[in-house]
Amino acid sequence: MLTPKFDNLVKQLRVLPGVGQKSAQRMALHLLTQKRVQGMALAGALDEAMREIIECERCHSFSDEAICPICQDPRREDNLLCVVETAADVMAIEQSGGYRGRYFVLGGHLSPIDGIGVDELNIDQLISRLKAEQIDELILATGTTVEGQTTAQFISQAAANHVVKITRLAQGVPVGGELEYLDSMTLNQAMSNRAKL
Ligand SMILES: [Zn+2]
Image 1 (cartoon, rainbow, N blue to C red):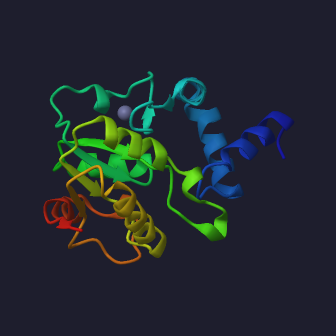
Image 2 (cartoon, rainbow, N blue to C red; image 1 turned 180 degrees about the vertical axis):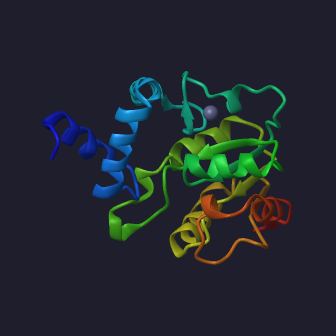
């Protein structure tokens, strides 16, 4: 509209969720007219993040190195493992502040309709980890959607021979809800009130 380079910037900004043509144009104009330096910093941060943030080898959350800071942290409890669908769920639980164990990110939930079966998730890696490590409690913190429940059920059966106590987040998590949208207090409560499966 203004120039080909401007149009391209607008087009790229529209990749962001919830950003339509109008807001993308407003963002581009804002950066160009008032925030050039910050715009450069933003471009640098994006470039670095897209190139260098990888999946943690142990928990499959995001990491700058092979092993992420949470997996490396010696103060966290090794015998407590919380299984979540995505890295966004790890962030949500961390922000609730009530959990001191380790995590394992599945990479989604079972959804045959979308072609996501056991092989598409990190379930084999999870079972290997349960075999190799002394985990006293496995907390299944997948979503309360039908798919999240099915996934928890599947893992609960697959893990039954390798861990004594398997629990599920309890009260406070609305049915049909995704963890990342819960407020910290609700999530904290759900974590402390988890139920044995
Ligand atoms: Zn990790």
